[in-house]
Image 1 (tube, helix red, strand yellow):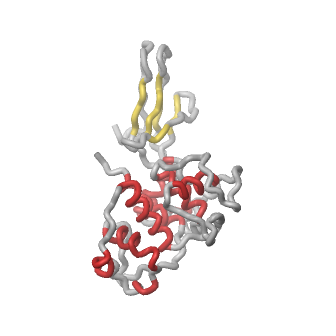
Image 2 (cartoon, one colour):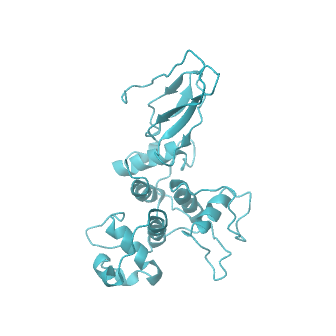
Image 3 (cartoon, rainbow, N blue to C red):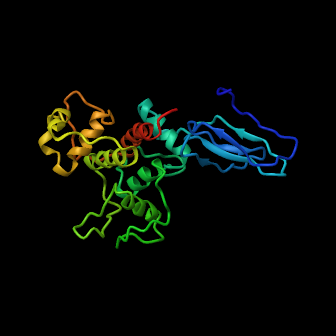
Length: 262
């Protein structure tokens, strides 16, 4: 019952193998046991559902309780429904967190370190031990694995000619963000490359001349598949700095492309 505030799964006899409970990703609902303790879960990369080992061989199972308790940060009230849905989804997955106990800070700019984490976790490419060999990224940095994973998978590179600077705290622009999304579609989902003679038709933006050459293929791809929200003026605005809210809304649309419903 998806509308129930809680449900339980109980077992009265030992089992001979693991019993795994598979749940939808949900919208921010914490999962706890009968004692109120959080129950660990892992994202199944194939089904994109929460897999919980609720019972091991020879052990009596415990009740698992799923509370329908959507976390709504006060500063998210007033955001669009699509942004709130995306934020709740990624918060529930553990990919994004609030900036404090009571704030989500949707209008804060997104930086390169945060972007690397968002993209690699969404694609299930994150490896906490991946070393990008950047001089400005230390093993103890929270973004160490994300920066290395993004470089390893070919979606983010260094910011200098030598390629050994990651510049983790630089804000990420709209053209940079959507270029990464385009690379992910090509590298993970094997999306086609837009033919050269079709680029100008696809890139029907009034500020098309301001798009850098290195980004044209990726921006054309994300435009073609509908990841870029068109505005009335057909302006791409490549130098616009992405906010946390905008990024999560776009990332949710990308997630649906990477993990299509079966």
